[in-house]
Image (tube, rainbow over all chains, first blue to last red; front, side, top):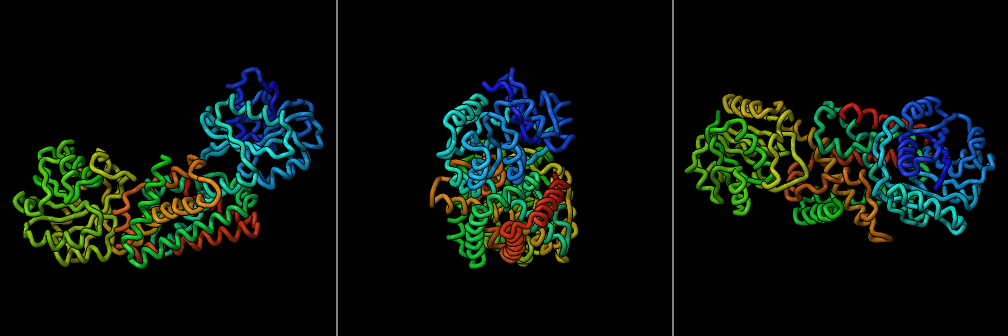
Length: 282
Length: 282
């Protein structure tokens, strides 16, 4: 479908998206833009991109049919007006983990040809050299159109993701932030805080990192995720993240009370309910 | 070395220990005791045990050289006096995740022939049918002797674990509970609480479990662990667990403040430090 696509931000997500694109549309030319020359160089060497540049101006001369933002969401604030000023007639979408108010900001600059997107796929890895072929296959991709979104742009972006092999679901931008604030951003916040707690607990008596088992490692794997990406997500979705953390704090407080009170029956119920619920999604 | 071993509690840990024992000492006879006839039946069918019974009296007639407690730690309170009353001249050890005061309780009933042990190995699985061969290989096993522990018993139990392929480390029983309260019990508490939070957040607007990605699944895998085992661990190690939870709560509180205050630099430092520390143990 798309014959020329520009990926803005050629890290892990941008690189994996380029790989998916190449597999899906072999005749599509893929152009990469990144402020970091190293990222462009690596992506070109790995054959992930056809062309690449560190100058946004060169995106205009490439004349893409689609621009895909794959940078940490905090940079969308400067990218949106910059891209608007290029005045290219093309669809713009993104791979960002925050939607909500950010979608309305993007629309203000880019109009109805912007289609918010969030593929529910990723790992704790970063960097284009870690790009994964098939990352988005059989994974959900949330699109967050608004009443302003162009029907044509939406249907083209939807078809793109379906062709890639994702399961597309449309969602209100604010509901998106509530949902992923809870199921993705909250667990990441908790994982980072848990590692921070073990750092603090290690200051007292013994280096606790010497004794971490498989459970701890699995549990904190996501704390190895890119700090820039996660700083931006936490700040851009702060309102939902903070609310989700509060609900979690209450859950933990209740658990503490059951432990402190030696409430064997209620503690058992609490753990059993969590186990049963978790087992349903495994 | 040991020619006859009795395993008390033939679930996942007891079963995996039996498999390790059989591989290490092919001529050792393995007897299993469990209050659940189904667990004994399954273990015998799977060839994990040579003999088995639901009667503690039959342990006496088996005359084991070693008894290994592999039940949830809460049952140690009734098991210790019962085993003492059998009056068998043998070494007793355990696979439990809590030591501290529990070791002193065991010693009160069983004397210096009790050697506290905690292999740092396991999964979220339970049940003898999920037993894993080689579970303890190249894994740490903590032994927690006290001044009362028989030197001979300690050296025999130590040799057993070394023969199985574990890396044995001796540790003070109370330090053990501090260490594993932090690196193991805390993450489990947090994982259970996180699932509980998602259950609560799902009550409002949407079933959030529909949207959980790979990160959430990895993160909460340990919330599928046996609730009886974890109830007992949380209650028996409540003092260290509650202290560790408090340190974690402070870490989370600090993270919340950085997010709420939009402190980009400090937030970045917080996430980066956690990432770097976590990467060292991967």
